[in-house]
Length: 188
Length: 224
Image (cartoon, each protein chain N blue to C red):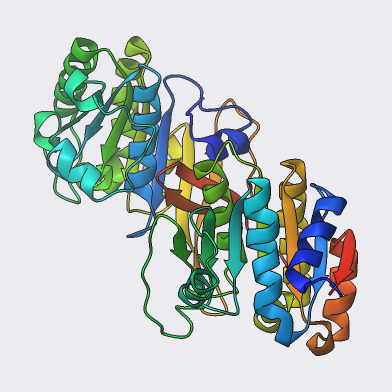
């Protein structure tokens, strides 16, 4: 029987190890299974703190889904770049900070820095969800500069940086940029 | 070292002792937060910090800022972080009038008494532009320079004025806080225009005030 996606994601990331920028290519229908594999099967079981940058699904929706899947969210910290834009309910907490837009790339860097200081002592898994929504909201050159800085900072800290992408709906220049800034492509 | 990590990196170390640094920018750009962090970082290191401001008590000031985790909880009680009113040192001068030498001498003398009594090593004066006339910046800096030198005290002068004029020109350092607008987004920025005795960067940086203090990252340029 083939292994489930969440287990495959966790096993593969463990094999790849820290300080490697991973472009995790997925299909829309496996989204929540992949997220579960990242934050629970891989993150929680390896005692990592997770910083989840979301520019596609509001943090409250992700939290709700993970809670429904009985995933422990106590070690997950969200940088929510989408709720403001959707004019959704904004409820900041110790685990969730909101940015006004996915185009405020410098502020994403600063919020990741903030959480990494807050969490100090644990290794970090940093999920960037997703390359598609960031590419929709940003110029490719700007996004490339941002990802280069963020991924290198995370690699220096021996973190696990994972960038989610839906390759079928990415523009060719965005795909090319991902190939340049990421060290490894994992397709599930 | 100021202890403000991003700023110290930009300055290539920190601010030379006894410098007078103007922190200027518009409303809501983070001037007061930066000055308070400068004092709080000092207090965390055992250096006494004093803020001269009309904002009121220490509690009132701190309630409007991020709760800096590095400010020792007993700093106010121990006197390593305190706030005094403007009128205890300075008398307000109407725009257009000049600061006569006698008034400046009186100011400097009052400041010296306060700094030496409490062994203040870090001073911040919030709203300095309201206390001195536009043309009096040079005379004001000249009057407090010796007092700061004598006490080994470094000062942040916080002003909502611009980076041109007699005050910026006379100060040892000028830090400009502002907003960078990009496609409708407003990013808080910081730029060090001058800092005597340092080899500082002149680039613009994006800043954010958090309970861990001011965080800094370079403003993205988006390629060549």
